[in-house]
Length: 307
Ligand SMILES: NC(=O)c1ccc[n+]([C@@H]2O[C@H](COP(=O)([O-])OP(=O)(O)OC[C@H]3O[C@@H](n4cnc5c(N)ncnc54)[C@H](OP(=O)(O)O)[C@@H]3O)[C@@H](O)[C@H]2O)c1
Image (cartoon, rainbow, N blue to C red; front, side):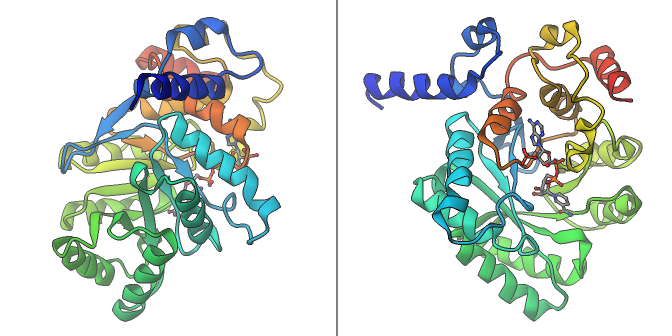
């Protein structure tokens, strides 16, 4: 990259990070998207940034330019701030198609780590659905294919084992979003060869700390945290509450950043995937991927503020 282009892209990224009310000291300290914190995927050592992007509901829009324009801005800003991993599913209406179209339009395909899912029963139907997802996302190979909510998990993992050997998928995983399913996810981790699990983990949903997160660490399985804001519920009691002064000590200037840093500071977590359709919220969330992370005592303080 020419120096002039490099300077321009850093300036664009920093303008995107700056938001009304953000301290200039923060923007001065973090001068490049390359400073986004990353984690290693245990099965290969490849790194991914700690903040990703969910697409449930948010990317489920039709073809109208007016509906897609805000999402184009969200995706473009995400990538310009160092984001890579986006998560979708055939269960999310038009989300795969919208994410695929926008990534192509923005020329981002090779810069993104694309995760999607298979959500059907039967080997043949799974095969067809996964091919359809890869076509919509324009991702072949796809970076990560996950069995959504463990639906017909063994059939699909058999297919995915073969597809991984054949180079059609780079990583394989399973997902769920309820604590009641964690024992079933743990059984898959113990019995099958998978690279990733994706589960619900947040300040409001901490059940995974008991068994699943230690198991993932022990088995060398990457963990994506879904529902990082408990679907948005965590903001209900925080909206009118001022951010504590000590948040500065871990480079946070919003509740969203504190909630996300709580998640990504757990040693088993690879990345969190907040969903948003608003560029302002996206910028806010991406800031959680920069700077100091909370230690145990700060994590306890964040949890006690949210209670
Ligand atoms: N079984 C599964 O595999 C499974 C299940 C659940 C979720 N997931 C994945 O995980 C992703 C995230 O979970 P989720 O979508 O359920 O919920 P979430 O990310 O916990 O919360 C999303 C909500 O938070 C709001 N929000 C985002 N950033 C904000 C900010 N900075 N300030 C204030 N509000 C903010 C969003 O509204 P705005 O749009 O207004 O910002 C939206 O209402 C999903 O999109 C999906 O990719 C997977």
